[in-house]
Length: 196
Image (cartoon, rainbow, N blue to C red; front, side, top):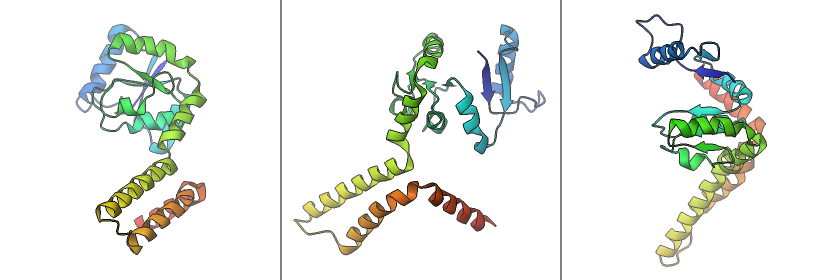
């Protein structure tokens, strides 16, 4: 097994190298694991799915995660994630399905040995069931509908205004279009033109 570390600039001069990169490189030297650890440095966002897909698993050793986009990106590629239970990690990781939540380094090491046995299709399916754009948009529609219904009931039975009904209908109708590849390509093209 090899460990690939993505991020930072491993070739920076000692004066310009981040403290964490210097610490990790020294740790590799101290443990004599230079042959099994590779520092890849920063990678373009569009290339990361290749690394996630090629990896047996993703280890997120942070003790602070606000949302965990890296974990979601890995799961979208079917790659299980090992993380500490901070930030959104307990909401994102289903132990035994798409990864493991660990409380210690010893638990993380045990998880590294166990996780490659997880079914990557289940990991990907877990992502699709909970975190695709279409799924999250559907969840928003349900929240808006519940809020609209609550507002209608609290207004002593008055019906939704025409604007609210039209807004909900438009959002519901747009869901399938938001998820299509053509729609994403079209939005990307328009965004690129806006930046020119």
